[in-house]
Amino acid sequence: MTWILGWTVSLFAFIKAQLVILLLHVLSAGPIPRHVAFEMDGNRRFARLTGRRAVEGHSDGFHTLKRILEICMRLDIRCVTVYAFAIENFNRPPDEVGALMKLAEERLVEIAQNGALLSQYGVRLNVLGHRELLPMHVQVAIDKAEGMTRHNDRAILNVCAPYASRHEITLAVQSAVQQALDKDIYNSSLITEQTIEENLMTSLGGSPPLDIFIRTSGVKRLSGFLQWQCCENTQIHMVNTYWPDFGLWDFVPIILDYQRKVWARSSS
Amino acid sequence: MVATLFLWFLHILHASLVYLIAKFQKRRYLPPQPITAYRSKLPKHLAIILVSYDAANPKNTEELYLECLVRVVKWCRVLGIEQLTAYDAEGTLLGCSDIIQERLIHCDDLSTDGSESELEYPLTPPLSEASESRSHSPDFEDFPLRLNVKTVYSFRKSASHHRPRKVAVRRRAHDKDPPHNPLTLHIIARSASKAAIASAARFLLDEEFHRRQNSHNLDHVKAYELPISKLNSILEGGLPSPDFMIVHHVCTQDPTPPLELHGFPPWQIALTEIHRTIAHDVVPLNHSNHSVSSLITEEAFCRALDEYAGAQFRLGR
Image 1: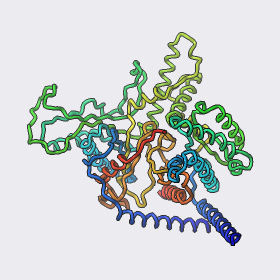
Image 2: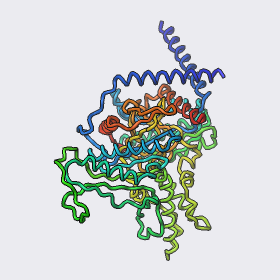
Image 3: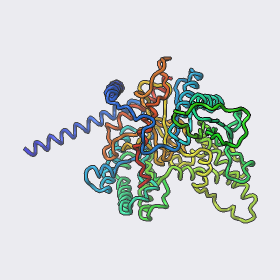
Image 4: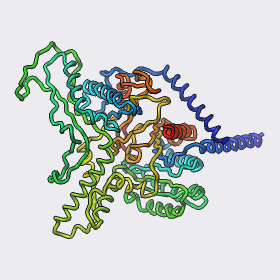
């Protein structure tokens, strides 16, 4: 009897997987966003709900990231940006920060390896942020993971860690000023909004404009994530689901909203 | 082709579900707390983004924006919210800032039924030019910095103020209205957004270029370094960061489009709590061209404040 039960469960899982693929194929018939950002919030609260440590919530969150990334790749979303670690997160308890650093070190290399998710879908990994603040062993792992995917050109995954939007904007302004100073002829009018936009970390990594910004766990703030990129022409969704629970049924309505916007724009 | 048909069916199904859920939620909506109810926290600086998709009727849009702003100013002053930023992307409010001042004075005159009061709006930059915020360099006259923020101050003077009056002020009956606290109103448009950051960058470039020219040592070969605090002092010197932001559509659409920030200044929204008014709380005014106009109501404002009071700030921890 056990084998019948196992076989039935496997059959249902197979049918479910095929239905998901079919659903994604149907969605792909309409306009698809070029760039989606996820503020993956709620890992610790999700873990506490189930009586576990915060660190285990982050591990669950990583599995959700892989799942959502695969959905995005199947939908042909060319750029995904995730907020993995804020500069302010260094204020967290040292054991949690240490566990997050270990997670980053192991998992980034894991998904960048041959045959793994990023190579399967031709995704180039960019780690954006104030990298010098990270422990040296994590920086080494990041360099290795980025190196493994450098030649991938089908899609981009930006992992922001440790990141803060004001830091990114400041660096962009700094770069714009330095570029103008380096020119033979001084001309301050050369610095425009476009100049700063081009010097943002996301732009330097080849990311297109941001179409959709999603924050999970019910918090209704940007908390220093992609402020320049999402303040204009970006649909912002603050969903109540905690990140480890975020799935297709949260994501599909967001894609449908985006498609309606594109159709409304093209008809007007 | 088949996939497209299925997609249309999916959209119809989704729209129907959204409609039914909205209907169901409408019945379960609890009214928000009254405006003067106790709330564990109130924003010190509130921002309101006014949005209209009715480009065909700019005069109507202007009137709606003005009325919404006057209402929000009144409520802010009742609650003691010290700063209010009013934003619309197109600059409609910025273009009628003189009308705004008149309306605010008029509303104050009508509501001050009691104690002697005098409203003043000094320090307002000339209406014909975009305001130029003072820079933090001692030579700021050489490096104009355009942050494009129009700031209006309103405050209540007591009877013993020092400025000599030209007209006697009538004493009225004891004031039973709620107190009207001082308020600083910033009126901005998209020109105060990314363009202001670009302006700050040009100012910093000018400053660095002239510093290097005047410098007698060889430190000009060093790479230019900009601390976040320096850029922050320039940008927040023109427009401080709001704690809370309310996005209100004066011309509602069905279905309601997802939240957008419509070009609000990006530097200032790092930790701003964001709320959008819901259709349930706003009263439709009229129907024109398939769109419905709506003013922000006290109920919508109170619901926003209730949400802000319940928000938790972990600040990275």
